[in-house]
Length: 347
Ligand SMILES: *Cc1c(COP(=O)(O)O)cnc(C)c1O
Image (cartoon, rainbow, N blue to C red; front, side, top):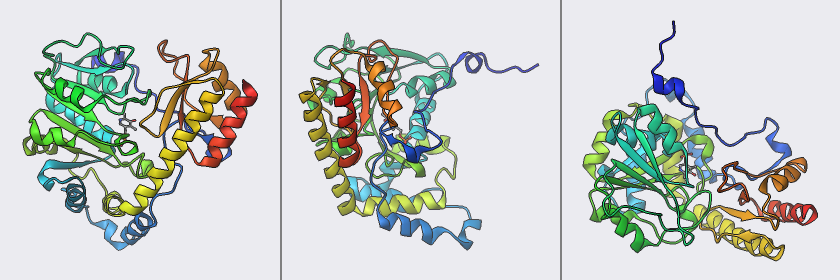
């Protein structure tokens, strides 16, 4: 008889965005990947690691990558932890802070993977809704849960909470505020300063989107050294392999290439958003590398299917709060021109 933990047996498991087998034959705008390749310096750094040295374990402390990230963000390396994708560090934050039966919270709509991770841990999950002007609905004066996850910029909607509002929330959580900044590089501003000023703030980042490295699985968190030390106890000791560590250092070091890619995506995003509005779509002003937009008839599913027929893949959510629209990742200018032409045709 197979005796699983009841919560594991009961849970559904997270369903990642669809990855078609013949991805080349699609315009793929469904998982917020970057349309541009990683920096050539990243490729060179990875190739330099491929060889005899692979028989040896990587640096368990990912020291070079933490130093590079610390330099970039203005923190000592003791304030930084590298992760096998930011998903890994989100998981370890829950394991570090929320025991069985304890509560974590996040905003709905945002990144539902927090709920999956909490279910694995046996933690309870609370969701807070949003007001029409994108503030958290009915947030208590003092939230007593162990963790509050704020996805900022929000995914899938693309809006940002104002910095003074985030700071207000820090004062309203008894536990720890985790600001998931997966998309922060596509806008101005960030919450790293709050990490310096408050001991209950953690910021997570990923190299998947803005650094074009979704395939390498690289993320990081910035937090107080005591928090980083706790996360270090929990993680796999060799969580980043040699190729990933080399890639992280090279990617973070090549800021010129990074800034060029981000600027192109922001420009394409803003152009695409205004063109969609001209077609009569409602578009939420986006701070990410995607837009959330709804067609005139409010039938996201219909347009999703018509685009899919034309081999253009976007993201449709069946959640009733999101079903009217689509989340469309920003590709190259040419990909977005073709997507727009298809949308005009579909109507
Ligand atoms: C993509 C994404 C992540 C996961 O990033 P990885 O580094 O690829 O694991 C985390 N949070 C949000 C909101 C994301 O969109």
